[in-house]
Length: 81
View (cartoon, rainbow, N blue to C red):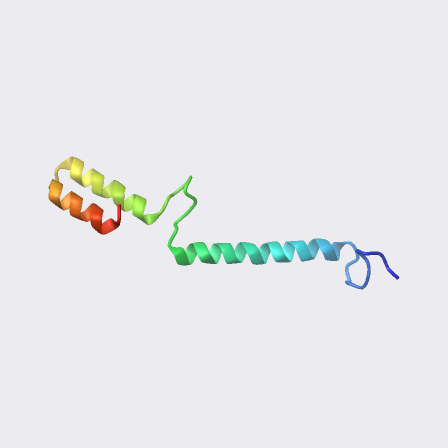
């Protein structure tokens, strides 16, 4: 009978560490894939989403007088805000 960490896993105590690193990498890859598919550009603290950037551009255009109030309201509605 071997110890818990050295019982036939090939790397002794390091086998457990490699297993944790392996599963951590798998979880990270899944999270990164979901973020990529969902269209998020970055963390909400650092970059926000594409919709936030569109809202900023829209507000800037309205503030400069490039679009009317009606156009602004319609575009905001189209963006889902």
